Length: 456
Image 1 (cartoon, rainbow, N blue to C red):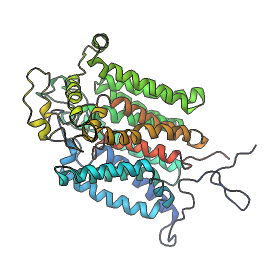
Image 2 (cartoon, helix red, strand yellow):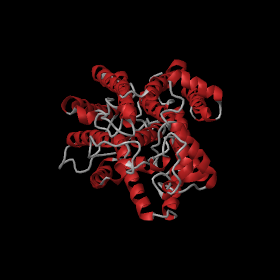
Image 3 (cartoon, one colour):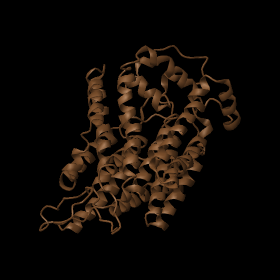
Image 4 (cartoon, rainbow, N blue to C red):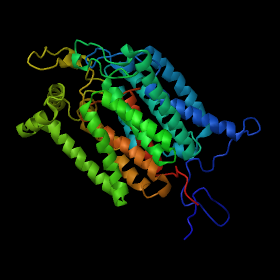
C-alpha cells in the first residue's frame, strides 16, 4: 500500500493528519520572499533556544545557599526577557498557525492557568508573585515559539543545531578564555565544588542537567541525518556533564536514554512509559525512601559515599514536616523558601544545613506541594508528567513524529528523575524549567500535528 504524506492534498485526497504549519501561507510575498521568512523563522527559533539556555547575563556565580533566588530578581534578565517576549509575540502572530495556538486551550492548561491566577490573587505579596508569573509565562512563550516557528522538521533541526552550538561555544569558550568564571572557585558554603565545571551557568547543578539536554539534542540530530554535527554535540555535552562532577545527573542521563529506547526496542511507546513509571518509583524509594528506611540509607551510603545527598536529606525532612500545615492549597506560589515562612524560624543547630537561607528544597515534588498544595499540585503534576506520557503514546503512533517524540520524551524522563534532587517548577527563566516545558509543549504538538517529514 502506498503511503500518503500528510503534506499532500488534492481534490481526491485529504490529509489524514494536520501538518504543524498546514494551511499557512506567507503574507505579502511581494514584500518579503518565503525564503527570507523561512530563514527568519530558523534564526528566531535558534535564538530562542540560545536565549533560554544562556540568558542575558551569563557567567554570574551563585551559591545554593543564597538570599537571591537566581535570575528571577535580576533586572537585566527581566528587561531582556520582556523585550524578547514582545519580539516572539510579533513573530508568532506573523508565522504561527492559529490552529496550533488554539491547541493550547486544553482543560489541563486552562485549569493550570486558573490555579496560578488564584495563587497570585491570594498571595501576601501579589506584586512580586505577578512579576514571577509574567516572567514564567514569557519563558514558556519563548519555549513554545522555538518549536512552532520553523516551517518543517528540517528547519527545527537546524535551529536546534545552531542553538546547541551557541550554548556549547559559550561554555567551552569560557573554559578556554576565562576559566575562573567557568569553573567553581572556593565557596565557604560549598568548598567541595571547587574546580568543577559550570560553564556560563550560575552553578554546576544547572550546567550538568542543561548539558544533558544538549546531548539529547545531539542524539536526535545524529538519528535524523546530521550525523557528524549530532555526535559532536552529543559528545561535547556528555563530556561537560562528567566534568561537573554530578554523580546523580551522570547516572540519570544514560538511564533516561535507555528508558525511551524501550519504545524502539519493543515497537510501542507504552513500553517506555511503563519502564519510566517503574524508574520513578525506584528513584523515589532511594531518595525520599531513605528518610524512612535504614536499609535504603545504608545502600545509598555504600553506593554514593554520601547518604544525605549532599545535605538534601535535611531539606526533604523539613519540607515533609511543613506540608501538613497547609496541605490543600499550600503556602502560595513563590511563598515558601526565601520568605518569612522560613526566615523567622529558629536556627537549626542540629541539622547539616541552615534551611532558612536555602533558595529551594531540592525536590520538585515536595516544593510543588509546599507552594500549591495537593489541589494545585495535582494539576501541575498532570501537566508536567502525566499528560506528556499520554501525548508520547499518541505521538509515537504517527511514524513521522517518532524521532522528535523520542527526543522530547527523553527530556521529560530526565527532568522527572532529576526532580527528586532539584527544584525548577514555574521557575521564571530558569533553564531547567524552560527545557522541561519545551519538551512538554513538544509532546503536546507531536500528539496533534505532523511535525516530521513523512516518506513518500
